[in-house]
Amino acid sequence: MQLLSTSHTRWEELTKSELEDAQFHVQENPHIKEKKSIERCLLNDNVDGLRQNAINNPSGLLVSSLRATAWPLLLNVQHELSQDASSLKPHLEEGQVRLDVDRSYLPSDKHHLLQNVIVKLLRNHPYLHYYQGFHDVVSVLLVTLDYDESLTYDIAETLCLHHLRDFMLADMTGTTDLLPLVVDLVKVADKRFGDLLELIPPFYSLASLITMFSHDLDVQDVVVLWDFAFAMGNVTQALIYLYAVLILINKQQIIDQVVEMSGCQIDTSVTSAPTLSRQFVLENTDAFHFTLSNLTKCFGTNGSSNQDLLTRWKNETQYLISVVKLSDLPTSKDIFSGSAIKQPSSSNIDYTVRLHTKYLVARKRNLSVVKNCKKLLHKNSNNLKLLLKVSVTVGILSLVIGRCLEHNQYVGLPFHHRTWRDMCNTIWRF
Image 1 (cartoon, rainbow, N blue to C red):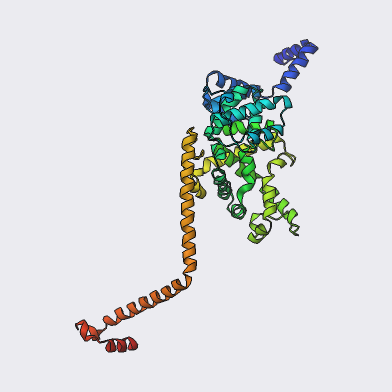
Image 2: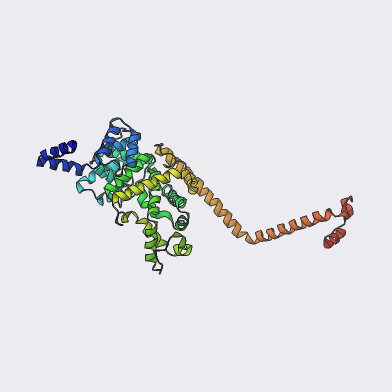
């Protein structure tokens, strides 16, 4: 009772301003314990501790000021002196960069920073190819890093060379070869639903992956996902896992919306993946594609708080990562060896481009061989049928003659005594 009395007296002694100040700090700092833990990790360069905080905290690394220090550590950013962009040859795709920068949601007086970072990156690494949506990635970096152009460039360069380089090759094959991995992961968790998704071209996941979910989600939600992806080590792999889990979490909503768009009279309260037929999926491919490609736009519209959704999303992704490796999935064999999901530590973009070029040449050659074989089979189909009939006939005759030669009539006789007439008579009797 004495302690309670003393405590009560102390609160009575607080002035009104002190009480308001205490309430302000409670409201503004709901994650004081987590923040102190992150600050200790940063102070001691404890990268493993940072990873645990980024993965396990519902709000990730909490605030921009902590991310500005933590992200370079998680991504192992090496600050290297790069040449001034003005002294380098312009990149062929700078025109598209200007168009996208003009459409950016950043304040107009910050557009030049976005332009500078992307152009400098392309001119210093001319083998990289700009893609629409990359400006969204750089925009989130600028906003989070308080428009620090130098730090934004360093992180963007690390992301491009180590993690996003498959998206920045000369053609889209490096990117499109990654998309089937999403379906493979869904099949691991839900085979029947995954089998149905396999009937739909997986391009619905393209925009979310190449923009790192930054095109449709709010920045405060995007950075929490980035905290998680950066902490996992291989950012590209983490993005693929995240999208697969997003599909799994929203499976019933996907089915409900597609059924509604199809106009079919199906009771959605009892409809599930096993009850949908392959024919239904094939007839409503466009509806499935539209629904799946807009999953991130519907984020947080089902009544749950974004923080709860993000926590569930991260937890289920972490579990899926723990039970299946991308390298064990069937379609991983179709991905070229220099891909970021196979060699994230390699930053030699020239080497990656050469590997990808060799891969494309070999792939084209293999496709050509298959195509020629199909043409040959089609062209000579009649001859092949005749050859097959003759082969079967000869095989049957060989078996029959072999059986006849074992007959007692021929035992011990030289071959020239076995006249064709006798042999035929024996075959007839046999």
